[in-house]
Amino acid sequence: MIAGLSLILLCQLAGEVLVRSLGLPMPGPVFGMAFLLLLLLARDHFTALNRGPLRNAAVERTGRGLLAHLSLMFIPAGVGIVKKLDLIVEHGAAILVTLSASVVITLLATVATFLAVSRLLSKSQAEP
Image (tube, rainbow, N blue to C red; front, top):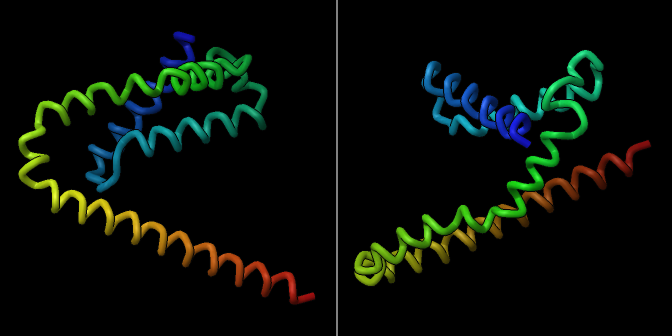
């Protein structure tokens, strides 16, 4: 588990270094996750990479362990919310409107994407 967690954190560190050195407007962990995905895909195609934490599904077991305790990651956010309740009370209406609008926009974007992909798939299936 330690080796798998070390590899996950090392990929995240590599992503942070890349983003900060190139000044990219993207979170470093996103690039780190892409590095990890590439490593796992390469492991399945090249047996030479099937060593250390990439061997015996150590990264997968570590990921499952982290996901099992994911609820613990929300405790600091909950404490922060309770600490700033005065701001939430003061700006509650604006927060509620913003959250509602973002939910509606997300749902509309999801429906539009689904319809576009559905049309593309029906056109490709209609053509011989």
